[in-house]
Length: 84
Image 1: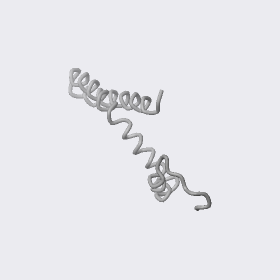
Image 2: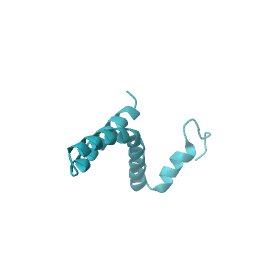
Image 3: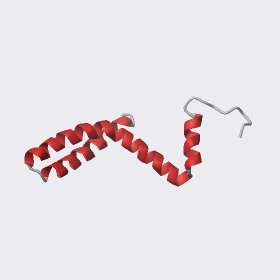
Image 4: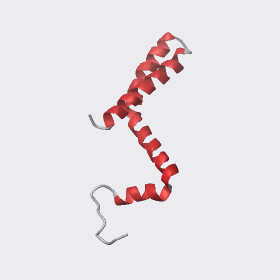
């Protein structure tokens, strides 16, 4: 299982609960619709939300320069030996 699959499942679960709770105030059918729509949209938006929260945590923990250096270096790029 990749990292994206648990993020999609967690996003779908959170979205379904939020949609059902917010929709149930208007009636049981709206709650069911909110459950389904929240599960679909939560599964689609969940990974992006978790990536954003992870970058926000890294920014607060290590500072913005560290986070920007993660984007500058990127995967597959290596520094030459002796380069600080």
